Image (cartoon, rainbow, N blue to C red; front, side):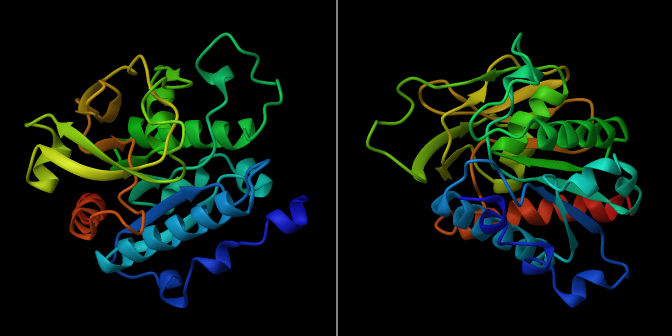
Length: 262
């Protein structure tokens, strides 16, 4: 598939006129790569659907979504200057993070399905957001990027975490740390989620506490102990078959935090 066919979705597919109205709503950046190398039709459609749900949940919670395409070279060239107009940040899922950012691998090495430039853009963004104590929600890849931005590493393949015949999104049972922000948001310590990952956080980054585990010990959630509201979730609350009430609570909590710093 060539780039032109692959890049069939643009910012206009996710933003509506209401999103451009500057008012009292907190501005919530939704950072996602609208193009990823080697993605097929199913991956492209999945990312489209997850992004649409995310921006609508932000609207429903009273926020103003601002979609940021981390794969866009013109956007990458602006660095993080766009942060000045944003109150809170959501980093969505997508491709694997280039191992050059957390291991001895050469970051210039081309790898299938990996976009090191998009990774770098997100890592710089996360570092600025965290340094400024802005509210942050990282989902799946976003949670892994959060960890890498703070000096942590990624387990590049989880042996036995899911059966070989399981593809796409699967149901998972997770245990939450009782005093964690995510447990307080959801109101319980045992949850059922929708997941779709073959990687996870390995060594945690500086300042991060593990707040969610799968039964096999896989890290499924982290939070920054020294910041106001920095939460990483390995699962996908924005997936269509995920718990809708939990999704509303999670996105709503992020928007509430954004309103506090507006």
